[in-house]
Each structure stands twice: as C-alpha cells, then as structure tokens.
Image (cartoon, rainbow, N blue to C red; front, side, top):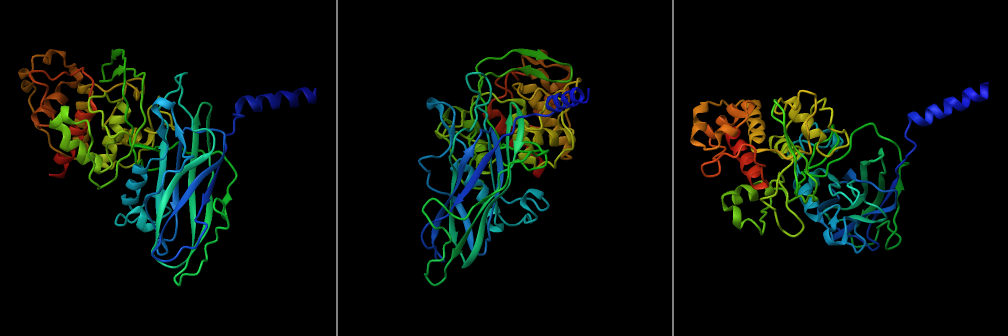
Length: 457
C-alpha cells in the first residue's frame, strides 16, 4: 500500500509540475591580442548550447572608466537568425544595439543594478540592455524559435582608460511559450587594457576566454521584450514590435473592443535613439513622414531590415499600446488582463496602460491584444492617454456631423472621436472618419506624435 501511495504521489507531482527545462549557455569572447588605451575592439556574445528560445533579455556590464560600448560590431558569419530563407530576421540587430548605447535609463529602474541616474546613457554607466523576442509564426502557426548555436551579437568597444575590467552578461532571462518555461544563463569574461602598449589581455585563444556560466534555473518573473518593444512586467521595455496582416474577422463589444484576428506577423527592428532615421517607402504618406522619422529617431517606432517602414500596414492593439507606453514613459502596473500572458513582449506596456486607466479592456476581463486596432478604438485610447496626462479636452459631438460616415461610430466611442477631432489630433480621411477601419502604422505615428505635442504644451 505504501508503494502504491508513493507512486501515486510521484505521478501527482509530475502532473502538477512542468517537466520541460529549457537551457541556453552563453560565452563572452574577448580579443585574442593586446588591447591598449585608445584602441577600439570587438567582443562576441556566443550561444554555445541551446534547447531553443523565443525571447531574451540581459544586461551587458563593464567598468566604464576602462572601456566604453560604442555600438554594434561586425556581423559574424554564424550570427543567429530566425525565420525561413525568404524572410530571415537577425535576432539582435545592430540598430537595437546602437539605440541602447544612447538610451538614458530612468533613475530607480532596478534592471540597471542601481546604476541608472536619469542623466547618463547606458554606455556611460556601463550597463547596456540587450533584448528581443520572436514575433514570426512558423508553418504550424507557433512562434519560431532561436535554435542551434552561434553568435548572439557582436559589440564594439573603445578602451578609454587602463586596467582590468569584467565584461558580463547579467540578469539574463530566456523564455519559451510552448511549453511555458523561463531560464537564466549569465556569463562573464575579464579584459585588461594596457596604458604602455604591453599585452595584458586575458584572452588566450582567438575564440576562447575566461568565461563562467550560471546553471539554468526557472524564473518567476515575466518574459522579455525586445521592441519595442519588449519585457517582463518588472522591466522597462526598450523596443516595440510591428505587424502586418492579410485577413481579419470582426466582432464588436460594448466597451469598445473590436476584435480582428491577425494571421501574419513580421519581426521588429529597433532604430537608433536620438539619431536621424529615414525610411525608403514613405512617399505615399508624405503627410506622416516627419512624424514617423521623428518617432523612429527616438526609438518609439521601428522599421525593417530592408529600410522600409511599411506605413500602410495595420497595427495590433497590443503594439499600439507598446508604442504609446514608451512615448509616455508610463510607470509599471501591478496587474493585467486575463488574456495577456506574463511572457508576452507587450505585457508590461499593457499592464502600465491599464494601471493608468488608459485602456479598460472587455467586460469579461480580456484585452484582445492580438486584434487589429480600429480607428475608433485608437481614439478611445488616445483620449485616455491625454486625460491621464492631465490635458483638458473640450468638445461637442456635433463636430462629427461633418463626416459622412459618422453614423458608423459606435456609441461608446463617439465622445472620444469628437474629442480627438476637436483637438486637431484626428482629421479624418477626406469626408470620412472611418471609425471601424484599421489603424495603420503611419496613422499610429502621427497620433502618438500629436498626443506627445499636446502633453508637452
């Protein structure tokens, strides 16, 4: 009887606990030759073993008085990509690395190990975030995974002083949604910069250096961003995501959610922060070009590997909120909607918007994050953002009479549409306001820019 009870207890244990355990081992590869003060050099972060993951974030740390990260390095031949051969996407992009170098993290942001002071860039404090997530589905409509081994990214440093410094990748978090699993894999190496020209680098071979890797373990925190996108619920999202779609279905709920399921998504590319960014496909949306380029230069909206922005592509509800939360620098929230997974790249942004009462979701506690956002729902959220920021809005619904399709505006959204039109944030499309049309990427950039302008006045 005791053996039967023990067996039953063991079966119960395995049925209650996931037996899947993801694992990824990182290694930091430093230069094999000497490094002298004033030199520039490259450091690789390599994946040397890997069960497969869909999201990652981590913090590159070093002594900024000795070395300084200046941007992305040379693309290695074995750089990790995902997607098929026709649409292959680099996992950690050069643009993202460059944007993080210039990013100024907010004081008190715990992700930066107490180094953030709201004044200095990540490169200057010696704590630079790396992050991304896969948004591309495979042939089974599941997220593609980063599989195999190779170079996660190459970083370019400048030796600004002399002495020995650790180069570490810390606070790492890898995750997989199916089955749900999260794990860590920190690594470190040591590098000596010589002031007199003698070689003191601790790297002993071209592709090997002193490296330590922590044991894989489960984490109770959420997944990362990439960005947009994004991030765990306790970490500030530095990237946003972009999506296109080829078919939708529509359902309306009384609280303003129009559910339109997307079936095709593309991956995100983060632009350089505070650097001039221009795209090669904005000629058809000249009215939005300056807004798009401005937000892209600030790292709020993103482009693609081929230099395009895809301005006429539709935007998901979650992605609009990610961009808006980043533009407004919303503080973290404490809870979320029932259909927003803690692992989702947009989880922290949606939670923050919910806490700020910018989004309310459905009456059943859901948010429908993957649905395309309609123009009227975008205006409901935009109005909530302005009210959160304390902007006084005056309007009369009679302003809607100028639109020939005003009868199509849902009751819950009429005052929001009127408020956005009266405030000059929305102008309509000719004689129509197209309340149930999908919001495009160009429209999102213009709306978010105008919201920021109103708030800054």
